[in-house]
Image (cartoon, rainbow over all chains, first blue to last red; front, top):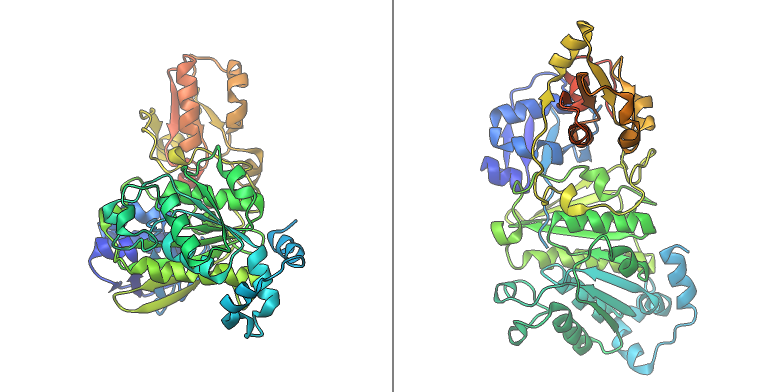
Length: 79
Length: 389
């Protein structure tokens, strides 16, 4: 599963994307668990960051498949 | 009257002078704008919150385009460190109020514009009054509390919020308009913890970046006013200057949004500093985990479980055995309980119940504890059949 990191998520992970070894459809919560296991620094962003799946914001019931492109887009506040 | 209907009504009585006809000729010759669209721009009243990196191009282009009335909200003075990106302010204006500096430059660009300056910070106690007299609000602020404030104010007043924000080399732009699509809270229900997301002052920003995002906000504002094209309602554009790439993300209205969803719990402006955690942290309260709660409920000891959510939330899901007492009713109903009893209090995620535990403690209930993580934790860790919302 390909995960894209935007803004502060990229600053924390030090990369603009990563691949996670996931071979089944998972929930948004399970994705967060996997992402934070790989990048513990993302933990503080979990509750404020929405997940996008193939260009659509995911809801609590969205299932994320291994072939999907996932994006983590934290809020930014600068102006 | 909706903002666009007001503009339509006001535009009918607008006259363009010979000077304005010459000034706007490149608009007037386009059938998509024409004299009718230019009249709408002149009839429109736009408020720009923040005269900084985003506000600079927003104000300059909206002034040049012929917006009739431009309001500017900013409490700050021009600082030397602003000049790298805040191009509406010239070097000689360092130390002067930003609203005055921006007003002077706007009137140089287009003396037909009526400028209203608000040299204050937008706050919960002045936002509704200031925003009320404008048709479109453009968010060029630089902090989370003001972004939630602008969003809530716009949704409560039924006005579109043309949103832009920036961070280092990246920017985001969309139009939040609760009547037609999602609001900021649908996208970001919770602010990040204080310090988790740096400001431009902390993280830096490429000076030209707000030019890209602010110009997109100005375009969206003009499109909304004239009624042109497809607005960015329900779509977020994320711009990455390093890779020179735009990504478009589809946004949905969140049915559980507390501001614009089906069961609204926010009916007025709140304390945004506190909401975003910028207010001083209150001391922690005694807690128990959902596992401990499960074991104690199963042991049928003397534990009293209180749910301090609202009845609409209780309808969605509940923990068996919990007594519903919405937080607002708690002070009046505390006497229903015995201070000698062990009390567990829960809500959705733990914040309201922490406030309830503080109230119990103040009233001498020293055995009151907060259920950490609330019913969300209960659903996740104890009983997945309890729906979350």
